[in-house]
Image (cartoon, rainbow over all chains, first blue to last red; front, side, top):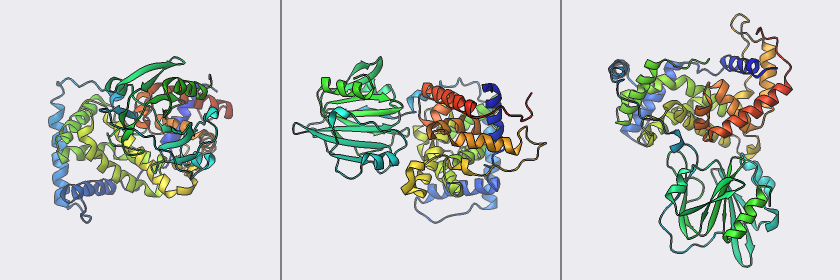
Length: 241
Length: 193
């Protein structure tokens, strides 16, 4: 069947899915009441919008739309969607001392895999990990090994990093199979931020030499090896090692 | 189409409402809530556990309000809001389904399709059931793209923003998903010519 027919059918399917609120007005009022409440007292009791307040809000809202359409000559600021979507890995000022935290034994790979929404990879050349764990928000799967007495750690994030961070940090850009990867040679502070600028995964910590790259929509971060070994492992995981 | 506000004047009104809401005007934000409530609820139903959809929507609008100062002026509001709703819905699905996270998927697709008067839809109930069953067999990552693109009526760019993926990833997942659906589905007799 043609894509065109299929896409029309899918649109039509979506249109007829039972996904509307039972009472849109009532839900709108509850949303607005909750906002009011949050504005007034961050941890207060639920307040309901009075009819007078609601009427006032409606008229002001209508006015806002009316007046603001008149401002349409203001040139729109260009949308820079790329600036806010995706995982941003931001490199800050150099940290003093970086120790690579090992991952405590807890989960096996199958258990960890069942907790995240991406297919984790395991570099065979490092052998069996000492530990595997998943962050409480289930966005990061981590594993570590001990190699010659040093900890090697691999974090796998569900998401892509924005190229933006490459400009901010002290990173060297390396091409792996033609795709950019970032090598942080010195110690650095590493924080994973989501699109609201909120940290996720683990709290920020000083990090040592680290390679970051992407594979199948997952961002991988390898810490605790030198540059050559990191590239070797990355290429192994990319299937060309 | 799913009730998408698409006219230019509405877009401009939205942009201005966003600007005013960013400036701290609660009434301007109320305009945005009204504009986007239905779409947010659809996303909450699709990506979260259905019974929690109202909670998800309330929390998402609150979080979006609090995050507005970090919203980039001039960016598209709808996909940004959708991203917050979808994340909130996914979190709700995870806590509702804590130990079976491997099956975290689009809970909304489990809803039985409502029976529709044949006059109202070009698709028969049977055909809709077939389509939905085929979509359910896709990997979750592909289901999400299908849901955004066709059930939330976002374009590819907006889908990318709503899911936090590069546009190229959305394109390739969409392509793979449609190819899979095509091989799985016999052509419909759903009234299209």
